[in-house]
Length: 242
Image 1 (cartoon, rainbow, N blue to C red):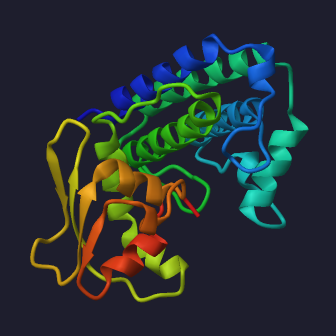
Image 2 (image 1 turned 180 degrees about the vertical axis):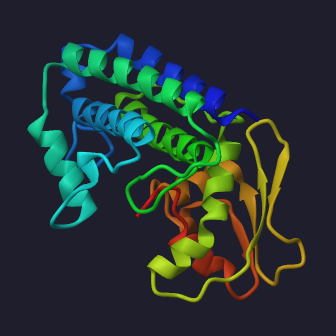
C-alpha cells in the first residue's frame, strides 16, 4: 500500500468536506477540546508546513521549539495565527500539497526531524495520515457529516501497533509484545505482531485506531483483550508523536 497516495486521498476527502462549509460552521466548536473547526485546520496547515521545512532543511521546524509542553506550544501557535476561514482553507490546501510533494521527493532512508524524534519519510507520512484522519473525525462529528472508515486505517493501525513499545515507555511502563488481529471496514483481517505473543487484541480496526487517537475509550469499544498485557496496551496506545 502506498502510504503517500493514501495520505493524499485522506486529505482530498477532508478538502471536499471543508469546501462546502459556511462561515458559521467554520466557527463552530470541533471535537478537539478548545478548538473551533477553523482552529483545527490552522493546526493542520502549520504541521504540513513543518513537514516541508523538515524535509528540505533537515532541521526541526519552529513549531516544535518550546519552553513548556508540546501541547501548549501547538495551542499557542494556532491561536497566534487565527484567520478568516477562506484564508485558513487556502493555506492548508497549499501546505498539504507542498508536504506531499516533499515526502515523495525525500530520500526514503534519511530520517527527518519531527516533534519527538526523527522519522523516515514513509513513517512521517503515516503520522500525517493518522492526524488528518483523527482531525477529520473532530470536524465531521460535530457537524453531523458522514466520515466513514476506509481501508486507509490499515496504515494507522500499523502505526499504533508499531509504536506500542514507545507508548509503554512514555507511560513509564515496561514494553510488552502484543499481537493484534483487527478487522478492516471491508471485512479483511489485518494481523500485526507475533501470533504466539502471550497478549492479544482482536476486533474492529476502527475502534483500535480511535483508541490510539484518544477519540474513544477502550471500554466503549468492541475490542477483545486476552493475556496479561493487552488491556495495558490499549490504555497506552497512541497514533501520534508524544
